[in-house]
Length: 108
Image (cartoon, rainbow, N blue to C red):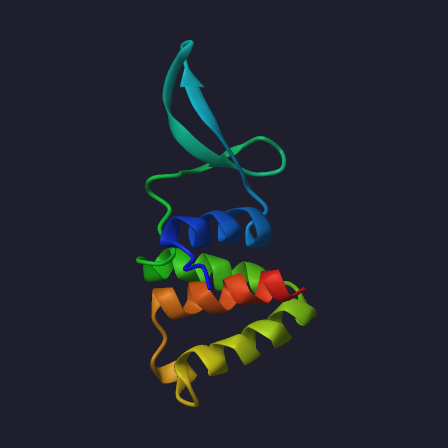
């Protein structure tokens, strides 16, 4: 079994949950850094700064997006229980949220 890296998890969450795409941020003709863009092409976040596996505020962004879909919400709740056990909602960590969200979008 191939171990998935945190960078791969973050990429999956950004693209499949948040609906973002990765692109280069260019200012005055010069490349600045990689950034996440929404489907309208608007800047959302720097790739290096959006860390839902480490930051609870970013993990909550993922949960809020998943909760917009009843099907995703059902799958997510199941994966959360499997990820952190019966006490899922008292032991929530950014990594647990991100793992459950990744499994949700990969199972649909």
